[in-house]
Image 1 (tube, rainbow, N blue to C red):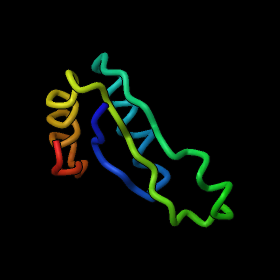
Image 2: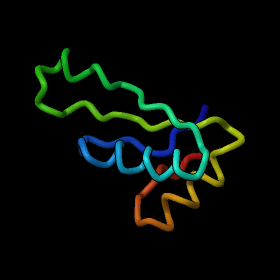
Image 3: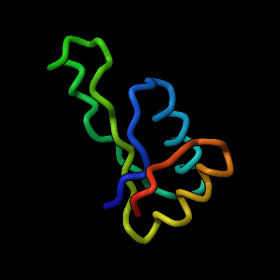
Image 4: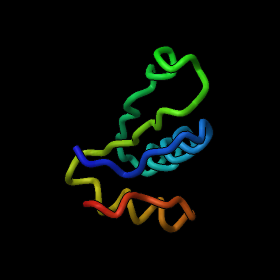
Length: 73
């Protein structure tokens, strides 16, 4: 698994997930339940992950749609 990006923006993960799933790329949202531990104030970033073999294609799709991704492959 590779991390595409991490964010505290609650709208960015569903947006990116919808784009990737529309292209047939399965993605996983990690740290979703951390907001319970932090008191729902949104300071803990959530991560969007994809399988290693889908990383290049997923990152290209997100870049083409102006979503900044992590630079570490």
